[in-house]
Length: 131
Image (cartoon, rainbow, N blue to C red; front, side, top):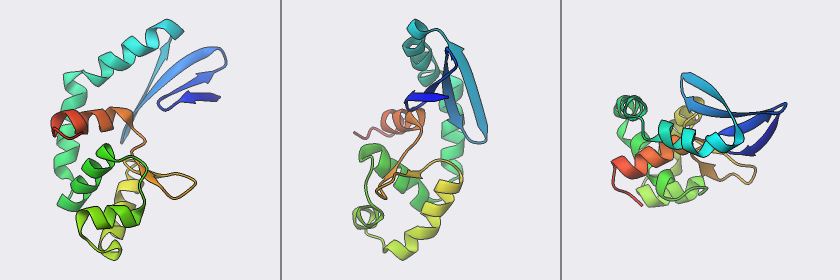
């Protein structure tokens, strides 16, 4: 299995796009030339948008604020999140851990926080008018 960019990998000679929508994981086998079109179709699908909207509303206010911040500023430190949201790191630790456990937030090798799901990031930016 070889990863070529977030959300896609090669399994043998077959290109596979993966949509992470916890608790759902969908894998879409694709031909090379169809991947961009398939990603666009999934990203603009009303059902996908509805799933994100429902899940987003179930989160706490701090969790929603963290996701919105990470959509705007990918790969920032925990300290930067706390500073941006004017909350102490200790008060955000549980929320960050919950988001990580749900697969909504990930941590890179240098400790930077980011959204591992490009579909979620796009939905957050588009539906909440952030940039």
